[in-house]
Each structure stands twice: as C-alpha cells, then as structure tokens.
Image (tube, rainbow, N blue to C red):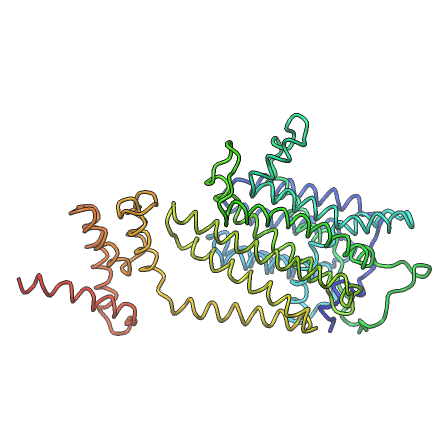
Length: 496
C-alpha cells in the first residue's frame, strides 16, 4: 500500500508530446464549467458537466480503454447520474462524484480491481490530482537547469498571487492599495472571483484529463532519497516542493498573511480609524468564506511541504516558519468567525450560518491538529484519523442540540421588532423552521401584538405537532418536550 506521506510515488509514464492537446481539452472543459455554473444555480448542469468530463477523459486517454471496460464504465456513470437527473441534492451530488471517479478509474486503469483501489482513485483524482497541474505543464517542456530554477519560484509566486487575490476580495483596504498600484485601476476591472473559479475548475479538471495512476502493485520505500540531478530525471514534485521552494514560499506567505492579520487586529478587533471612503460594515461584512478558502489552501500547502521524510520536515528554519504561519491561519479563521458574527448580528441566523460557524470551528481544529502532527512527528494517516474523529464528535454533538428554537429565539430577540440591532423579522422563515419554533413564535406574537398571519401560522404548526404525536411510533424527546410546553400553555385558557 502506498503511503500518503509521499504524494507522488511511482507514477505511470506520461506522453509529454500530448500535453498541449490535453491542456486544450482541460481549458475547454473549464470554459464549459464557467458557462454552466458561474453565477447559475446547479441542477441538470451537473449531469451535463459530468458526462462532458468523462468524455474528455476518454478522448484524452484513448490507448488505455478496452471495449468491455468502456461499457462497464458507461453503465456505472449512467447509474450514478440517474439520481441527479431526478433531483440534485447533497446525496445525489455525492453519487455523481463517486460514479465519475469510478468510471474514469475503470476506463483508464485496468490494474484497479478492488474496492480499495476505487477509494485510492477517489483520493488521487480529488485530493492529490488538483495540485499536479502547474508542475506537469511546466515540466512537459524540458529545458534543464533553467526549468528547475524557475520551478523553485513557481509555487511561491503562484500561491502568493492567489493569496493576494483572495485577500483583496476579502479586504477593501488591500483592494484599494492594489488599485492605487495599478495604472488605470486595472485590477478593479478584473472579476477576481471568476479568476479563482477558473483556477479551481482547471485544477479539478486536469487530473481527469491527464490521468496518472499510482503504481499500487509496486512497494516503495519512502526513506530512499531522490535520484541525484545527474541521474534519472526527477519528478516535478522534487523541484516544486524542495527545501528551497518551501523556504521561499513560507517567507512570502508569512509576510502576506501578516498584512491581513495586522489589518484585522487594527480595524476588526480594535478601534482603528478606517479611511473615509471605507465603512466598518464594508470591512467587516466582506470575505469570511474567502478567508476560509485561503486557510484551506494554506493547510494543504503545509501538509505537502511537511510531508514525512521530506526535505523540510527536520529543518530548523522551516519548522518555526510553519508554526508562525499556522498561528496566523488560526487568527484568520477567528477573524472570519467574527465577520460572520457581525453579519449575523445584522441579518440574523439561519441554518446555513450556524453550519458556517461549525465549519469554521472544524477548520480551526484541523489547523491545530496539523501543528500537533508536525510537533509530534505523526503520519498523515494519524492526521486524517484525528480529523475524522473530530468530525464525528462534532456531528454527534450537533445531533443532540436542538438548533431550531435557538435560531428562532435569536432572530426574535435580535430583530428590529424585538429591540435588537438586526433587520426586520422574517415571519415566513420563522414558520418554515417547523413546530419547534412555536415558543419563539409565541414570543413574537407578544411583541408584534395579535398578528393574524403569524397566529394562523402558529395554529398550522400546532396541527403538524399534533399529527407527529398522534402515534407512539413517531415519539421523540424533542416533540415530547414541545408537547409539554403546548399543554402548559393550553391549561390556563381551558380553566378560564
């Protein structure tokens, strides 16, 4: 079994003369994804793109496919797409991803026959594959020492530019500085979110087009050092994530993150005076999700850079820089949570915003686990296991928490009608929360007076609750507690 600690061992040989054609196919599919998804709600477009991606993989890798495996792959893909044709939701989307990966694996990798091989294919295509694009395109052209020299600066400059774009999207001050540096405000005319969409889409498409499977039948020894430069050609990974490239990256990334962290400390956490053309609301309400994307990219880089038996693992210079950078990432997550809290204070709570808080907390836990993995010299398998345990524990706790009354009470108390700083109370959303929101609706009725529309919604929810409690088979402790509340409310009126 190939270790996760070494991300690119023993790959099948590639045809470098076909790299340009494959890049053209990948760019075409990226353009298709832009047309299908950018600014548009997903639906049947997901099915269309999955079919196009599978067809692109077939065209780009014709020599690996037999008729029998092609028929099997088509059947798997069609079966996996059928639920999404019926209705696209989270579960049907997962079926689409699994069917796409398995069908591409069947078509292009005859050595993968066991279920475990399919799981490895999922890992290779979705977790490792997106990081291959830059190195494989650059190293498809062999120009000796110059290529290796450029490669050392490729990751720092490419990821550094991406972080600058992300921070400019999330921070109006950084955006303003970049606009001042750009003649004619060229940067302000660039749709940075669309640029990020293209980069992400191309990186995700590429491993399906330029298929390179691990040689799982060959045992590798991760302790064997790479071949010397004078011997066999080294993997692009050796150049892109060597000690020099990692050191340059960490110095640059720490400086970039320090700018964003310092601005948050001054203006978000402190009482710094913003320029007159930027309001506190503009600064606080922008980019919580974008900052989390930056943190996830940072975490991925740390995992690759500090891989087991890699050149940076025991460096006395690199390890402290990693710790400083992860600390800044934790502060960035805390700033994103504060931004979301400020946003919720104005626009109130929803299930998605509660989920965003929980997701950010999991990201922070994941960052701390990365530090523990490096400090304790544990494997990536340990890191994955601990993250899965954290996820399972979080989901278990969430199952025991009744979020509906919490969301409903918060919205009533913090709404404009309730004397809070938020917007007007959304009565329709309050009713859509279900019977568990009835206590909060009662409080809203007291605040708003005898609102007939809200009272009728309450009566309807009481009927739903009565139907839920009609049979002992549908009994639940939450419904039981709510029924006790309703019974207690009904007693005084009955006595009267």
